[in-house]
Length: 188
Image 1: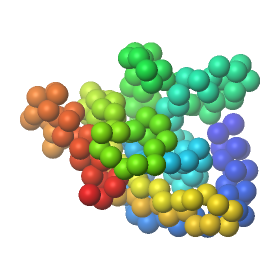
Image 2 (image 1 turned 135 degrees about the vertical axis):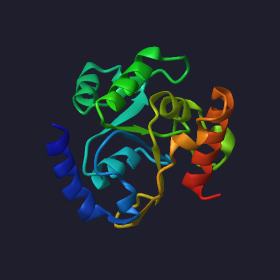
Image 3 (image 1 turned 180 degrees about the vertical axis):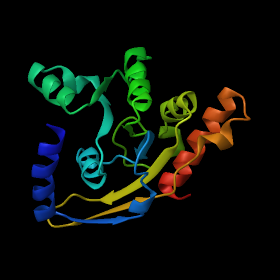
């Protein structure tokens, strides 16, 4: 289902938008990693799925799964429902499973669409999952208005290796990794 839908949507997006990708060589060819990008529009996960050859298993708010039809649809695409207001251990376990199976996990670190760039919007979940699973993070910046026939500029940066945070205590490692991720996505 994922590949078929990706092919169909890919044709539509190429007709409607001009997608410009820099740094595609920074996407690992195999193995597990986390893709983490800024999030300003509902189309952001679609664009990321289109530019990455392998399937990306995205986290999405549980509210999208209320309708049974949408729930089946999103589940068939490998989307993981998460309760953003509470500690969702079921979703975290699913993220760990994606990584154990050497797949790509897609997480928007602010947890929702944001317009104002501010480090206080960053959640610590990406860093926690990366550190617990010894998994690197590929930061991505999406610059797009998504107006018809507009350009979508995507910059894929060099991966953040979690090894450089291993000598810190867990709390400090999570804070420092979250800060580095923010600075990488927004090139601060």
